[in-house]
Length: 480
Image (cartoon, rainbow, N blue to C red; front, side, top):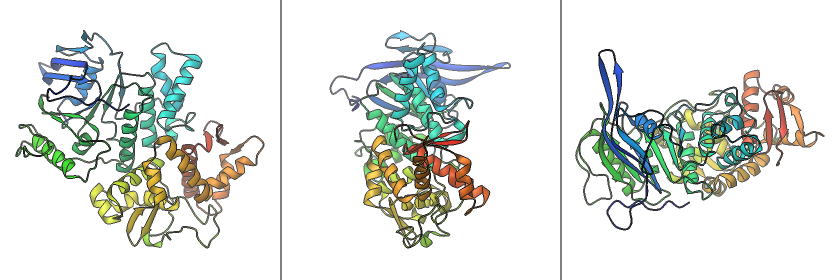
């Protein structure tokens, strides 16, 4: 789907209004008083647009989202879906939550199917629809995994699939990237854009709640800026930038600065720039995503320092799991770093750290993973993508998985060792303990576990093999 343009200046026919809030007010009872969270909210959700609700804590962003979903009723005012007043859950919406909200005792596939059960879809039909949604978000190979086996980025992908499986018209997202590390969030923002543009997905509109100004400009066609205590709409701003958006462009920077001025109540952006213009509001900051990095913080690396890692890793030595250990990096983390490098071009590690608000240690293993796979070159503290890395970064979800499978078979000895062993067994299955025993000859117990967990994560993403946690077995992927 190529989203139709949203008309804001009266030129052409206005896009269809799917969902509307009029004079919305929401308060909560307190002992002897009430807390007013929202006041006088007038908002239209139109077909063909991504709408961002931008504001600080206390601006009522999440409360608006829940009113639009019909999960809570307004104190006064109305919410209408296609002209009909909502009197319960909105059947046209699905929600993606900040905290993933997965059932830990259910597998990925079972978590995705939950939304279908509420609509009475069961049996083979529910399984088929769930598997299609899992495929769309790039989780093939993780169907039987439990949430505890997944990185934060993978858990949020499950949330995406669970929301998409019911084929909603409107996707509601409550700060879906704020619980993720910077690199994983960067990767999933790019994949959300792919989902939005995918003609197989019937979503007509996305509403995303965020406190991150750059995220709003990167993703949205229209940004609604909210003030706080109580939440009121301060300004609406159209983002008239083509996708994919270049965060280094002058237009992007002007929009970010203009929204920052609106949120902080400082000077108005210049009217002759393609920027946000508007009045004063309460608070706000140009926040960036933080959070803890997916996966273990420890574990062996491909070298003691950046400069110690040879650009042709493994040249002149035996290519074994012990001689070339895997950097402990999630697929989402290394993919996110590749997207950043595609945007910035070759960069110093210190410069990247400053831009991302991280220390070099926070993303060093992702950089080393890109280098191991032949996707990046690291030389004297600078890192840049190779042509193979650019192809990987620019590919859609399915093609990136194919490229990743080729790279890990060729350049990640532990993944290749697991595949060779599985391919030589009659049933295509081996206990994971066998590989742990092999790894303990080269690594301590903790590092051996980090190595195997990383290999399983990479192999699953590449759809090379599966992991059965209940039986502690690694099996060839049915489609491998």
